[in-house]
Length: 424
Image (tube, rainbow, N blue to C red):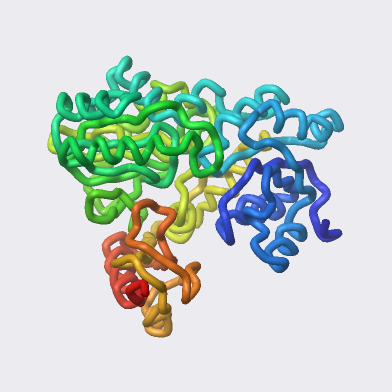
């Protein structure tokens, strides 16, 4: 590994995202003088080329092989570092590994989220059950472990309804179903494989939920020994039904203080209900005619570009403070400026072959544009998005107000449309 790495304590990152996004927690660790370890069961997931592998190896202190689906395996792989007194913390930035990291941290005596809270947040059914017991407003729901049970639950809850897996992420498998045929077909699709997209065993069945009429926000929280600190509320934009793909965010919200306060209370009530006592949380809330309703709790900081737009708007590098918290340091949740920022994601209008992106040079002339990242290669197959994994790129825009940031970001996304040819 690189001789230029810091010589401070170690922090283990258990799996991460792909590409530039996945490097960010490792880079923040280095900036803080820590030595990052990447724990993975498949380095090829990130080292997609020799250049990528070289970059990872220059960034991390060590690459540790372990079965990252199993906390016992991760614990044993990290135990030698802990016994040497060098390991200060362990971190997950991907939903699938939050319980594994919480259990590992507990076993090694390191800072971390209560493992039961981590498991509850990870399992959408368990979140629903716990929050229902404590009166947190949320949609009506039912677990179905057979096709006929799913159809019966949908009839009872009412159409349209939402049918989703219990433990996926990034809106994978979440679909609006308008009749019994769609419910039955989607049940079969969701239960066709016993494992999720990261190869972990899935709980049996699906979740059938009441469809919430309204718009979606998220509340960004960092919980420390001082209690939960609300970083802010994010406006979210989604694709048209039947899917729920995120197409953009704006921070802070443009909505009135009364709405912001309502959704914040709902999010904090949900976190209290599951026993969230440490680390970042990204709580998704729908504002309905009957008030805020919980969508789901993610026991990690907001994904995609949410951390970036918070930093562009306020100067607060939330990821850096999350890393700091996980090695036992006091985070500095300080807003350096009062501005706004927005992200927009590029998606294909139809299935086909990507010809390229038109208008990149024009977009870069727009005021406030601070990132244009295109991560789909021309010639590759693309599809109309079914989940957040189908986005093709993003833009980030900074401005003085949320309204300005949102308008310029919308303008950029329209100008930077992917050109897609019909498949042969």
